[in-house]
Length: 308
Image 1: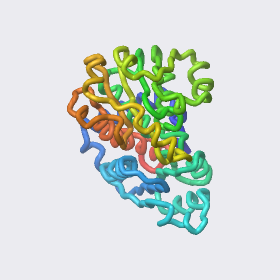
Image 2 (image 1 turned 180 degrees about the vertical axis):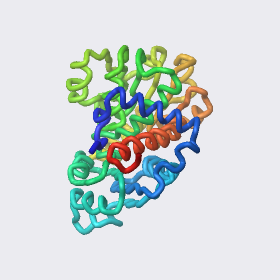
Image 3 (image 1 turned 90 degrees about the vertical axis):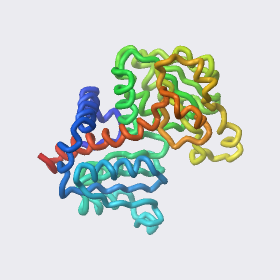
Image 4 (image 1 turned 45 degrees about the vertical axis):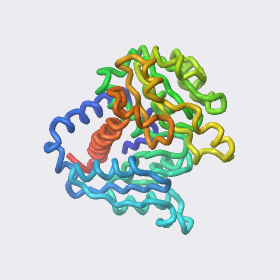
């Protein structure tokens, strides 16, 4: 049975097929409206979420299925000490597929090892967020027409940003992609990503603290927030939280076709005045995420024999 814990659980051909399915769902939604009739998605969210949880739930409803939802450890048996492994076994008795978000790295893998139904990682700590990456890839493809031959800038929290790590993993498998890594020294991309992904694959990258200088050469700018919940020291968070703020004035330095992405939620790192710029694609990302989750659930449920 296939589970999606890391974006690398999907081959390039599978990612391309999911984007193709998502585009077909956009074009012909009625053809997909009953494919999951009688099936149930369990959303196990032990960490706060709005977009990801609602996106999964909307995806299943639009496929004709139903949703069982846990929103927070305090409202589940986790508050009584139940393990992730036992939770996965129990929920497998009620649902056909699981989407799990958990603050601990590796929790989704434990769930997959113990569930008897497909498990999708909806974010585990600072580790991975593969379905956000699928939303990102779909958006890039729909906006740029390709996933190769791109210069991609990542700006903000590159140390704890699981969306950044996942997207770098995914894009590194396409030809002609290079990265500009823009962050404060304290929030630089971890060495395990550079040494484990970029260097072995011969990916061109450079690190800088200067957003304005990087903008003119980018095809894409992926902004991220500095995540308060990942910091052990409040003083460090307050010192770094407004390191980069994208404004209309700064955007004038960028090319007319550059796309601005953000996994959301944003705090201050993108001015609301940028929202009306045609290069702002972060709300398109939200919608594309729903379609990609629809495509992913269809793939996994078919693989598990739950649908024909």
